[in-house]
Image (cartoon, rainbow over all chains, first blue to last red; front, side):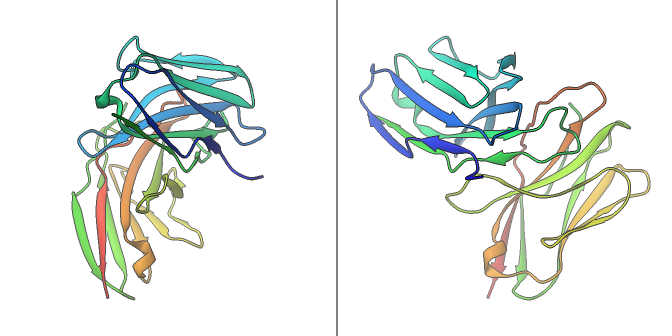
Length: 115
Length: 112
């Protein structure tokens, strides 16, 4: 398996534009996480899905952020409209659920810059 | 979620053992202790996990206190490639919860 695949790896956009980040989890994994990482706030859990269903989105910062998982092999994180303070590295991870005894695998991340 | 406490930073000389501590005094009986690390410019990667007994794998060893209120990640011979931020995390299997929260971790510096 190629691991968790995120695209794009880098995104530069202008303030106010819509941004869509994509994630393909590892085949067979039924849990997916979205994280945001900044120097100030560290690694924040934004939302996670179990069996394609959003379980906890309490980490989503604002209504401008939305995440979907239409099927087991694909998820998106959308920011509309984007703002400079959204600039960060966004990570996607997947694991098997129930998962206390299993590991999570992370993608390489998408570095988002909003100018 | 049960919280973990780690030192902000540690240093080690290359090729010497490193002991990274983690306190988790409010751990529940169904919490697994997980360790991840994040190398510069990369996503976090899994290192090791355990429940009650000490664990060994090709990357590291995990020593768990008898009362489970603390644990120690052991790198037997630190290399420059081990310089990273190390995170200690508790994952509960009992309730079926699946959140994976990262704290601030310990930044390990390896001195050549």
